[in-house]
Length: 307
Length: 307
Image (spheres, rainbow over the protein chains, first blue to last red):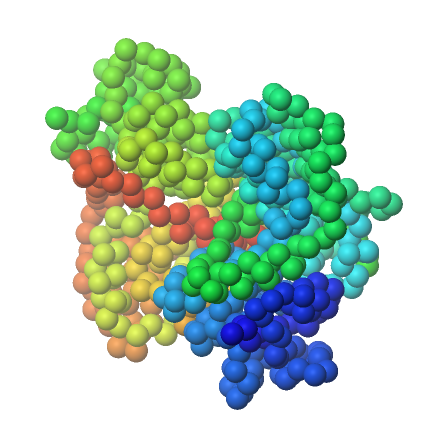
C-alpha cells in the first residue's frame, strides 16, 4: 500500500524538486499540502500542519520543505502524531533540536529521514567506494555560486538560522562527510559577513582528518558567470574529482560518470524503503561542521549585499 | 594500584584546582607535567605531551588543562598511546573533534572523561532529583561575572574557539542540561561582540524544552561588584533556586544546601572510578548548545574591551 504523504511548505524547493520526484516514485502518493501562502489544485490544502493533523485527511508521512528556522514545531507535531517525517536540508536551525527530533522518532517508532540531496548525486557512491581503497593526501572543495540566481528574494537565508553561504556549502559538506573514509574537524575558519546581513556570504574553512590530512573548503555566494561545485581529492594513486555538484566524476584524469540529476527521486525512493523497514536515517555530521564553523570562525565584515 | 597521571598545561586552572584535587584523591597520583612555560618541582617535567609520551616515565592517564583550541592533537596523541584522558571544559574547540576523540577512546578501549566541573557543585544532584518529580513552568539562568577578575590577561578566551562569555556560560549550561528532565533547544539568541574582539562578551539566549517550557539565559562578562551565578526554576509546586554556581539550593523559599566547593575532587574521584570500570563519560550537550548559539545568534557590536 502506498504511503500517503503531505508536503509542508510549498515554496521554491517543493515546486522545483519535490512534486516531480514524488510523482515519479513508486510506493508514495502526495495527498495533501500545508502552506501559508499557496494551495495545490487537486490536493487537500491546509494553512499549516496543525490544521492538516486535525483534519479527516489521513496521511502516513510528512515531508517538510519549510525554512529551517520554524521546522522544529512542525516536525515535532508530525512525529508526536505518529507520522513518518522527511526533512529537507538543513534538518533544523540547531543541533539540539534535531537530536530531540531523532529521540522522539525513536520513542514513537516512526521513520525520521534527514535528507542530504547532494549525497544522491551520481558520482557520490562511486567516489566513496573508490576512495575506500586509496591513500588520500589532500582534499579541496570549491563551492561558488550566484546567490541572486539561486535564492531570489529568499529573505530567510540571510536571517539567523538561515546559514547564509552554508545553505549551499552544507551540500558540499554532506558529500565530503560521505565519501571520505575518515572523519575530520575544523581547525581554522574565516567567515565573511556583508555589513548589512546576519549571515555570511562567503567562508574559508580548513579542516583536518583525524590522521592529519588537510581538507580545505572555499564557499562563496558572489560568483557570477560559470558556477563551481567541485571537490578535488588528491590521492597517492592519482586525482579523484567530483564536479557539477557531485554529478560528474573524473578519476586519474579520465571521465567516469556523467549522469542526469536524479537526487530527489533517490531521496523519495530511500524514504519509501526506510518507512517499509521502520528505520531512521539521521546523520547530522554536515550540520555539526556548520555549527563548528560559526563557533570557531573569525568574522570579517565585507561589502553590503542588496538583493 | 594508583593511576599514574600526567597534567598537560600548567596554567591557572591546573594550579588553582587540579593539583590540590589530585593530591586529595585516593587512587590517583600525579607523576609528570607537560607544559610549555612551567615545570613543577618534584615531578618529571616535559615541554609537551609528545616528549612525555616518548620518555621512559610511565603514565596511565593524562589530564588536559590546556586551552581548547590546541587540545585535539594532545588528546589524540594520548588516546592513540592507550592512555586514559580527562578533558577540562570545554572539551574541545569543535564538536566534530570531540566526537572523533570519543570514537578513538572506544576503539582503543580506554576511558575518556569530558568533565563539567559545575555539575559536581553540591546543589546539582539534589536539584535534579527534586525536579524529576515536579512540573516545571519556566527556567531563568543569570550568569554574570567580571572577566577581568577571573581571566586576567588570558588572551585565548577572546580568540576564535575561546568562546568568550560562553567559557563561564557553558558551566551554567552544563548544570541546566543535567538537572532538567527534558532536553531543550535554542529558539532565539543575541550575541554581543566587543568591536575589537573575536568572541562575545555577553549573550542573551531563549531556549525551549521539547514540550515548550521556556528556558532563558543571560550571560555577561561585564559584571563588577557582586557576581551572579544563579539558576531559578519555577515549578507548579514552588521555586527551586540554585545560587553561587550551583553550590547552594533554595527550595520553596527555604535553604537546603550550603556546602563548600568540592567540584574538582569529585571530578577526580569520578575519573578514578571510570578508569576502574573501563567506562567513557562524554556528554557534549553543553557544547552543542554553545555551537547552536554561535550558529543561530544574531550579532551586535558593543564597546571595545581592553584588558
